[in-house]
Amino acid sequence: MGSFGESCGVFGAFDFEGKAVFSHLYWGLIAQNHRGHHSYGFAEVREGEFTSYRSLGLLPPVRHPVIRRLFRNFRSHVGVGHVRYATSGRSTRYWLIRDMQPFLVGREEKIALAFNGNLVNVKELREELKGEARGLSPSSSDIELLSRKLLRGMRNSDLVSAVEGCMRGIEGAFSVVGLTQRGEFFAFRDPLGIKPLCYGCSPDNQTFAVSSESAGLDINEFRYESEVQPGELLIWSGEGMRRERIVRGERRAFCSFEFAYFARPDSVLDGGKPVYKVREEFGRNLAREDPDLPKRVDLIVSIPSTGDDAAYGMHEVTGIPWERAVRRHRYVVDRAFISSSEEREKIISRKINVTETLRGKRIAVVEDSIVRGDTSRRVIRKLRMAGAKEIHFYFTFPRILSPCFYGIDMATFGELIGSTHTEEEIAHLIGADSVHYQSLEGFVRATGMRREDLCLGCLTGQYPTPLAQRIADEMRRRFQAGEVERGRVYEVE
Image (tube, rainbow, N blue to C red):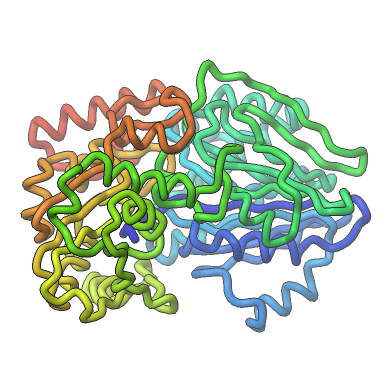
């Protein structure tokens, strides 16, 4: 239950029989509503004309008047949708409205685009595209840069060549779904495959869908077919489906944080085992790596919901009772972009409730991660109020040392508590009796992936793309020299 955001979930669908796909779009995004709380949106194309709807906040329930109207009005056999958590651009209401997705761009030729990720070489792209249109503000989301680069490539050649130009000319993470004016539905993934993207098919083989997570396919009762491979482009049109591996990168770099925090526990990532199985193994690793755990604590407590599966794994290994004493208020939703700092503090504090069953107990608290420490500090305060005698925190994600440049809201070294403090210091700062991280080796082993196939930049300071590495090294140099950090170098210069 962290206090940070990830940049979005996407879903798109194409029906070969001409049936409306809006229902699939809606439910596919509902299954991924956890991936973006700032805004949501839909776009479709019929006979060369685009229709779109975008709004701030969480995607509403199906009975909401707006959604009921969209079910009536969106009738195309092809469309895309998006839920967003802003990790580029400003987070004021004005800019959040401006940067909502799907993003529509073009005049004579138009496209609608939505993506999950973050671009790194934004300064270079702004310089390259400054003649394309007005309004490429340094404060805008990088979706405009991606959209305009793709559209310019399409004007000069075709969709395949345009996507290749994006894959070779853009550094960063981008899992994309989009529509052309001709009614084509396409999806592609950056050559490193940093963010998840998969596709599936309806039981009658007539409707195809692309989703950030497999849970978006499951809710529609679609059959999971495959991951969209790194550097791959998929196109659906009236002529059928086309699948082409455009760029083959030298390595893969799947976001390791998906396993610990972002993905739903019932999703399957990168063709592996369900996420909840990975998280159970995280808990077993934490227990194995601390053989004194059974002597130190009386109860295991998890922070819902990303800590639950790991707590079960820890319980399996140690035999220590798992007490579900911490519960989340499921209808308390943080609207940080419309709240004052004081209101945000109250909202986050009210998200969880702790029962009195912990009085006099020594507890092991299982949590997915610690970034800034604010949320953990609030949780510990509530646990102390509930009478916990000792509080030992166990984090499934190893210690975060460096910022992320690919779509996680961790921008500077100074804000990362693990970058500037030891485990003992962190325990003191958040009010715990001790702090324990899962080892990096244990984490990688539990994912079932090879270390070289994961992006571990925030854990090791070693990034899979060259510009991100140079930016991180420069940021670290400035930070160590005592300069005040104002964000990522490319965001403020």
